[in-house]
Length: 200
Image (tube, rainbow, N blue to C red; front, side, top):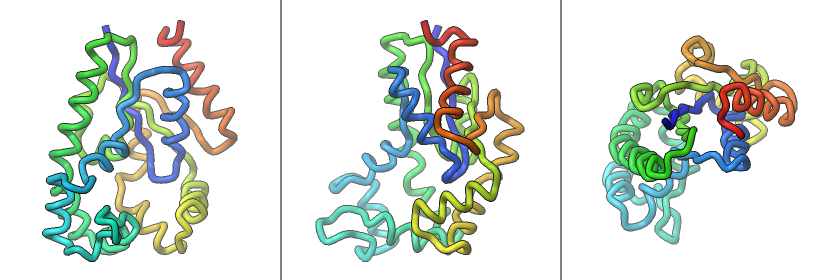
């Protein structure tokens, strides 16, 4: 029997580090961030609908989506963020479920659904367990500012657009503490995998 693990966290809490580690260990990962890019590639219905709403100003010269410009619009306007979500949500969900079903055909012991908005977009019905990667608010803020070259105010807006990390932790099956080193984070994941017989 295959167990479906929902992997989530907050922006800049280190979920990608854990996701990459699962991939290193050859555990199947369905990455929603990959899906979100695939469904807005040139020629897709997703990109067409985004342009219809936000205009061609959110396109780069080569016709691809300018994510930074679009992010600057939606993270400063909750209504615009909701509109973008409504445009993309159906297509992302369809992509995630298809990838999961493709992996289920090879019956692995564990499939990871790496979904940043797992709680916000109601994916709990798709998973058996939830792993939340968490940090302190101070660590999250400083990492986000450094990673995306954001002001403190801009970083706080992005963090505030998501479900509070404390609420996610309360509902998680397992919480991975990513305040310290990458090796410490990986050790927590590895120990959990061994304890639950997902690694032979």
